[in-house]
Image 1: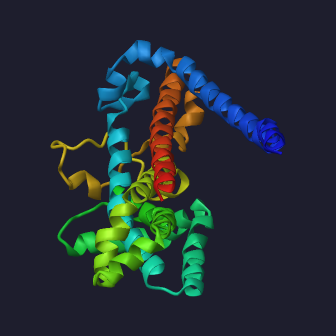
Image 2: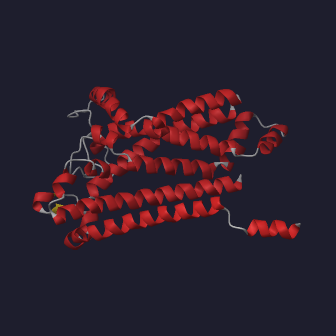
Length: 306
């Protein structure tokens, strides 16, 4: 009987083979995309070299292709989104996983997860109708003089709402993966519920929480339509000082808003211009894949340690 069980366990299952095959297809498609983007972007790398990454001017009629302002805009928008969404999402996850009864927890979690199913264009329209007006009025009351409410700040706030379900859901899963026996033992030693959360649950779940933040960051970096509608799409926005807040309250440009605009269609007839657009796509793809892979790896590590 042990021999039969061992022989049966070595027999390849259809599910395992199918999963392996589909994984190979996905990996092959990803590598094909990376190779295609790399080949088609060669002209701009030959033309601009490292200036494509370090240049601060993008003006295609003059054959100037500097992506640094778009990288700056992408980083600023994603950072604002994380700063706003991470504390709220983690706090909501702590509340749902540690304080709410199971049925109520599932209801609240499901309600928050429904936010992830709303199309991004709907978020963008809500940003146009409400958020940019609120941002404009707030900046005006604070003594600033913005030209409009279409700013990097507006895009960051909108993205924070969009990535909130990702942070909250994955953090909740990471906290629930912490062994209940550890909580019981800690309470038996006299620790309060708050002390258990701060000294047992959160430290044990930190890999999962970091994975949630990284996966949310990947979502923020890749978002197009909502950002496109409220960011202002102003080229060549680069601060005089790197940590200056002035450009944050002005219109800007991100990698996704540039790729989602009309310039992509204009560039198709010009090999150099098209190579520059494809190179922007290559940068975005590499960054999002790297961050998503790191977040998924941390998530698997957290699940394995649970």
